[in-house]
Each structure stands twice: as C-alpha cells, then as structure tokens.
Image 1 (spheres, chains in turn purple, yellow):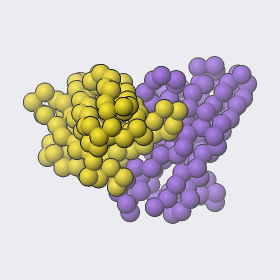
Image 2 (image 1 turned 90 degrees about the vertical axis):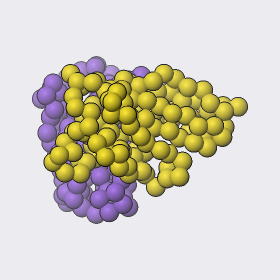
Image 3 (image 1 turned 180 degrees about the vertical axis):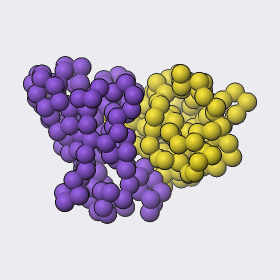
Length: 112
Length: 125
C-alpha cells in the first residue's frame, strides 16, 4: 500500500520549462509504470505520458517523462510553456500487491 | 475513433442508488477493460474498479466493495456502474475510462487511454 505525492501547485512563465514531481512513498518507483494525465477545467483527463516516458500520438514533444530511482520519483517536464498548458496534472501507478490503481493528489500548473 | 459517451447528470437523495451508463463506439467493446474513476468537487481522481466486458469479471477498490456494482451489456456496447447507499460525500463526477491493453493479451494494464465526458452525481436531501 503506497501513496504518490505531488506538489499542490507550480507556476511558471510562458516559454519557460517546469517540472512536476511524483514521489512514491514505499516500494520502488520502477516496480510499475507511471502515467501522467492533464485535466483542464471542466474537461475529462487526457494522457500526456504513459509507461514512464512515452508520449501518445498527438501529444507535443514539449511533454516528457522521466524516472529518478534515487529519489524514488517520477517527473513530468513541460518545456516551452504555453498558456494552454495551464491545467491540473495527475500521476498514476498500479499497486500490484493490493490490485488497485493509485493516483497522485494532482498539481495545479499556472502559466502566467 | 474511440468514444465513450456517458449518461446525464443525476440528483439523488441520501440512501438511494444511482446507475451511470457508458456507451462505447469506435472499437470492439468486449476487447478492452473499462474502469470507473470519480472526482469529488475540487478534489483529485479516485479509482473505483474495472470490469472485463467479455467475461463480466470485476475488480473493485476496497473502499467501494459492497456498495458498487459494475455490469455490461455487450449487445449495445455499454458498461454500467451502480453505486448504492449514497451519501453526501459521494457527490462527484463519475468517469468511465478504457484500459489500453487488449483483454486477449493479458490482464488490465491499469491505466487509461480514453475517457468518457463524465457524469455529475449530486447527493442531497
């Protein structure tokens, strides 16, 4: 039984780069793949990163995912920020011991 | 293209039940697991469970066991989620979402590649 912890909010200026972290509380971050979802206000989530670092078709290459084993965390990096990137971002993983899906608490990205 | 279209908003009294539908199109319904995820107002995402549309097998999150029932009608490519014993803290948007792994390949991949538009369920006396 583990948790995924994300910062509550981050903000950055257009054109800059921002990184959102997702730290796993127990067990190895590489035990199960990590996904990232973007949710704009009033909309359903969409996948921006799957399998730790894979971009689904249609997702700009400004979005990238990575794993830091030493920190037991995953990260979502968005470069060349645009105002349209302003949204909530959720990391997600699977707990294979308890057979349930785990979401991080979400990070509100403000692009100002 | 893959589409998941959910039923409309519901208002229910405490103690009642609600049944939300998720009609799919653009792919073979019985070939991919369907998950249900909810989101309370201003809160994060919470996974409720999945159904195998081919066999009807289910896996529910511990929190919802005994209160949630997931079913399907393959003849109309539709999945259902019924939640009973509603409380005010069940007020949320309920989403169906498709698992990206084909059932023929293995168990669910336990992530989501397509989502429904969401159904707001309001529980209020």
